[in-house]
Amino acid sequence: KDFRESRYDEIQNAQLLKNNNEPIKTELEKYFTKDGKPNENMIAEDEMFDGFSYIFSTKKLSIEEIMNLYFHDKDIVEKAFQSLKGIVKVRPVRHWLYNRVISHVFICYLSYLLLSLLKLSLKEINMSPIIALRELDSLYKVYLKDQRKGFQLTKTVALTKIQEKILKTIDKKLLSNCT
Image (cartoon, rainbow, N blue to C red; front, side, top):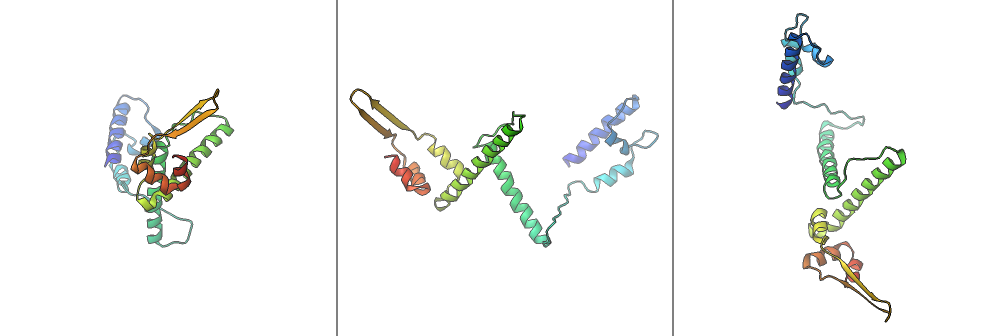
């Protein structure tokens, strides 16, 4: 519907430009006859496929397998981008040098890999990695050192039960390092 309405708006604006003998976008020319009137047949022909997508595969798969892969994988990819933009906070690349772009993409990939591994680890407690990271956000350690007396103290701020549960699930060694 949105695409169709957008096309009508473009054609209507192009009609006004044509009436004033101004140039229009070349891709809109097909929607007009030689005398400058809207070509209803061409508009109807293009409308016929509005809202449809074409999916093809180079593998020999059944239609059901292709559709299942498309909808399942599309969801995974969309969630990956959502994670990269959200919790990983990927922003537009401001690098132009090849090595810097490659490095940026690698860091994004690595971030998503770590997020996926965290998701896998948290599966047994049924918690998303985003919720876990938000819970762990307030976790920190205090390091105190008195150089004159050679005294040092490391103390983790008291863990909440949820933080304890997350650290136990990810790796029990993490929990022992926090006490």
